[in-house]
Length: 179
Image (cartoon, helix red, strand yellow):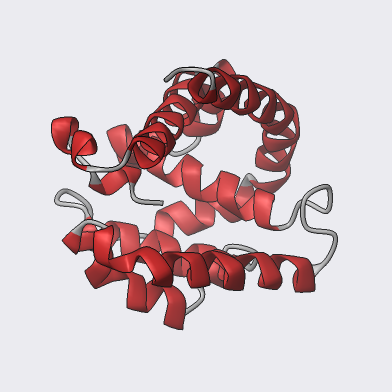
């Protein structure tokens, strides 16, 4: 959860197991960003959002994962997962980066992880991303793009996610086998 907030050598400020988690997150991001399926997903956002297309694609992947019955057989299973995640983060909040500490109360109070499941949650996530971005000011085209390409994006997710899961499992195993 904190990898995006830990820059460069700052990862070495953390315990070894957290460093491995950061490296795993970065490996997953790299695999995702460079994969041809993700490039196709990004291509629908790219004309409007350029380099930010990847961030929109990540949110779309989160939406489909939150709705994937292979991992969360119903909304209650996703809710239980999100509550457990928030509890674990609460127990470790003091060691997380300050910017994450500032963001976490909103994440938890508005249940971002669960709300990726809903189209309105995706719309709000797009709005939040645009607010934080320096060169964007209108999230409405992204949401319209999402709605009009949802079927195609679902098919791309269905192709991609099993590949990502296998890659992540392999990368995790390698990280755990390293001192």
